[in-house]
Length: 402
Image (cartoon, rainbow, N blue to C red):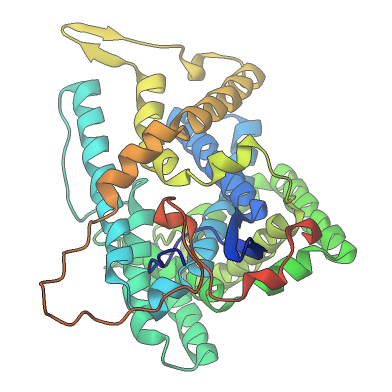
């Protein structure tokens, strides 16, 4: 019988088929491609959105695409993080939570070094951020908080999280420090994902009427973003956790209701993406399984490509996107985002980021009893631990059905 490893918490689930081979149980492990495909789409949206934001062009088409992307892509990512956190949270696997803290520090130092290379000077604030690194830190916080809150009634906890998420915008003291504003704003999505079952989502995504409804939601969101951008610019800062008073005096009074409405829209768009993304497996699915390295390093590449880099006394500049016509700039942004996603999703970058962020566990002293951990019942092949996460019996879910 092959050795059994204790595994937990990862963004991707898998299924196993056992069959007898000469009296020996052989286990095939397959990832559900749908989740990898969704993650690839979302990380591409992250890269494209950051390119649009970094260039800071006041262009109608880019602004509308930016609004559409930011209305759902980070809520969807946080939702998936909650969906695949079950084993780590329920098993109190602090090492898994620490991975996101290590990822936060990696991004923080990588951005610092990149800024130094660009301008030879850069401020460094370890626990104050509203930049790209915020996601890693809030997921670390979400793991720890949910380990405690999971013992309470889920409806009560979810209701309280939505209430605090809506009320946080009235607190002028919340800001970049410890990313508390964004943590309050996004925690309901993590909780909802944590308590949602994969089987439920997979069965729902197989229904034709659900797919049609999802398509209608995304089309409507695209039309509204295109036609009413000037009236809806407040959606992105409200979702990001900014104080309502910093946005608009009228918005301050009804800010909580505005954020609640944004929650509903973001959730509908998230479910629409989940049901519409196909389960077709390909090389892109492998890239979708390596989103950690793309997320960790993509903004450094964006800064270099869009700003250039100092070499001695010379400032080497690259093709400036803000000097191109809008349609040409969009094509270049799409191409650059695609290249960054593909290159940073290659195995060497994935290996490097995991070596830095996945902490090795301390060896148990001889003779000392180890703390019991929940174990899987199937043999585990030699693959990265992030591959494995399943809290429900996967054999009931057949990939040819999804």
